[in-house]
Image 1 (cartoon, rainbow, N blue to C red):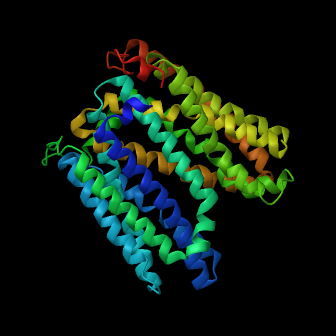
Image 2 (cartoon, helix red, strand yellow):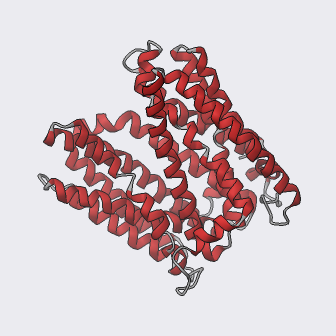
Amino acid sequence: MSAVLANREFRALWYAEAASVAGDQLTRVALAILVYDRTGSAFWAAGIYALTFLPALAGGLGLSHLADRYRRRTVMVVCSALQAVLVGVMAIPHLPLPVLFLLVIGVPLVQSPAVAAQNATTREVFTDDALYLRSQDLRGITTNTMMLLGLGGGGLLVGAIGTSWALAIDAATFVLATVAVARSVRNRPPAGSKDAGWLDGAKWVFRDRKLRVLLTLSWLVGLAVIPEGLAAPLAQEIGAPAHGVGLLLAADPFGFIVGTFLISHFVPVRLRARLIGVLATASLAVLILFVLKPTLVFALVLLALSGAVGAYQITVMGVFNTIVPNEIRGGAFGAARTGLRVAQGLGVAAGGAVAELIGSSANTIALAGVLGVLIAVPVSVAWSRLGRTDPTPATPVDSPTPARTQSA
């Protein structure tokens, strides 16, 4: 994927995102350990971890529109600098817990418009459709790799250097991201109008039938993520050793990384949108095999396969950003991202409730797979029909690219 990294603007955006994701994983671990050490309460430790996700829901709908109203580079720079300050204050030892909780809420709120601006700017950077989709592939691989590293090494690093230093490192990643974006990304004029409504992007998305169908296929991840929420009881049910929980959590993102690379490398751009429905259905159909009460190895294979075909999510957002007009792309992306987060949260909560009711995590995952397939099949048929009849371009079209890019 060297062709996309040859672009200076994208290199800065890619580096800023990678550094922020790595720092965020470190912060989540550090905060959970910090709060547990000070309170001795598992409830408060889990609560502080949840707070790193929940405010993004409000920010995704309400603040992502800032990426359309103002210069996107300015939004990214200001938000990244604010995050550096907020996380830097968190690093102060013995900070009162109420203050810490307020800061934890503030960071993802500020992050929402920055993520929307970054997403929209990447589409502006790459007008060539094949290059654009490959840039999204690289972002997906990098993000999931950073999450895996955080999952595997965050606790060890925090244990070695302490929570304050871990938070200070995260603050430093935001400083570096701020500098990278300010120096290398063009300062384009605002894409939208300041007179536009705050929810215009969301309204546009939900009025468009093709986008509604597309996002339904994306939000099915709310069922695919259920095994993650049930990793601990599943490990116990299938007789896995103590380290099995970590392996079960890592299997899906590992599969996603492999699947993203394979799709990018072997599937032509013109075919990717046509395969969205097939891959969405397959990612859930694999989970039905959990009814067989798999061994740890078999369970890891199933979760990795589900994650690999689940890499269709990257194509979903690529098609989404191609359909949505540039002037509302920030707000529209915020609506899509918020829906994705809500689906994941509700899916995990529902999975836990069902597992408690029927007394089996494996059967709960299998039921999630059955429900997902029942939803995915008719929605996939609708997506296929819209692709044939709707004049709106449902997928980027291959354009001439160097052989070096095609080999990526």
